[in-house]
Every structure is written in structure tokens, then in C-alpha cells.
Image 1 (tube, rainbow, N blue to C red):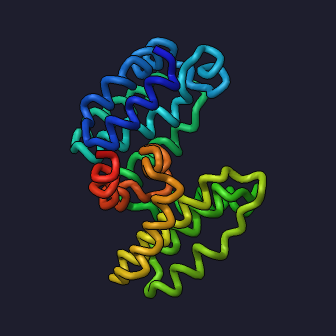
Image 2: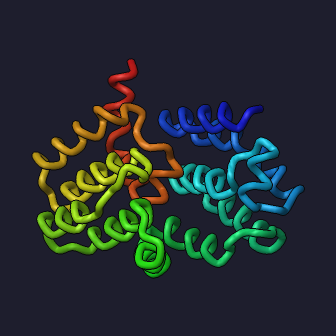
Length: 219
């Protein structure tokens, strides 16, 4: 099964809360990862497999939302104990941060990346983590808006920022601003962010609030 097709189907399964179906589409990749044990991006890509980090992100999102954490922990443990050519320290830290909803655990790693080799991806991740600790909505907005996104950055990052602003408005009980941000986001991302992307920016749980509107529109 082509990786693009499998991931697309897993994304739709995620969108409709068919978490077991989503796992069924990506499980074959993990069986191959277990056999190959080499998790280098280039090695996997030229063999038609998704990057391990991407597939793991899908698995983590599905496991967290369905409560099947033992599956996520088992696959992560196997990769750490038997895999090669991957940043396993970061993988284990990511497991803790995403599973326990503690994004601050990853702040140091992302802050170093943002300072040493600035990119929209790294710096926006830092901003989202810091904005979650902001005491007021204006403070959170200022942190998120300060990140500069260049032409070379992934275009979807602007939508990630918009969703993060919506999450901040929700956290600070500003329903009007939240609605405005959500409308902007949905206009550009009618199928929401892919589960691994929402997870990596600590927006997976908040994005669940938007699913009913997507279901209604799809019908």
C-alpha cells in the first residue's frame, strides 16, 4: 500500500474518530520498521516508507485520543531498544510530553534549535509552548505573533499559528476571539491539521473541539 494513500486514509480515520481503523492503515509500516530497525529518514523514504517520526506522530495521536497508550509505549520502547539511526532521547522525551500534555518538556530542545538554526517550525513551537504559560490572552497573542515566518517556511505554519491563537483564546475564555480565529483556520484547513502536525505543535487535544463542525460541513 503506497505510503501517501495509507497516511491519507489514516488522516480521514482520525478525523471521524475511527481510531482503530487509523491504526490499521499505519500498522504495516511499524511491522516493517521492526524488521528493518534502521530508522534513518533517507533509508526509509527511498524504500517507499513514511519517515519514522511521521508515522510515530500518527500513532501517538491515535493512541492518545483513543486511550491505547500501551500500544504507543510498546512501539516506542521497541524502537528505542532495537532501532538505529534516530534521536531516541528526543523520541522518549516526546512520548512524555505528548502523552502527559507537558509541552514544557520539549522547550529546551526547541529553544536550542530556534537559536542555533532559526526556522519557523522551531521558533513557532517555542512560542506555542511559552504562550500556553502566558497569564493573559494579549500576552499569548504577542508571543505567537512575534514569530517571523519567511517564504522558505512551510506555508501551513501560518495556519498552525492561527489554531494556536484560537487555543489561547479558548484557554482565556474569550469566545468571540476564539470564534474569529477558528473561522480563519477552517477557511484554510477545512480538514484540520494532520494528526501528527497537530500533535507536534501541542494542539491535538484542542483540535478535537473543531471536529463536530467539520462533520457537519462534510455532510
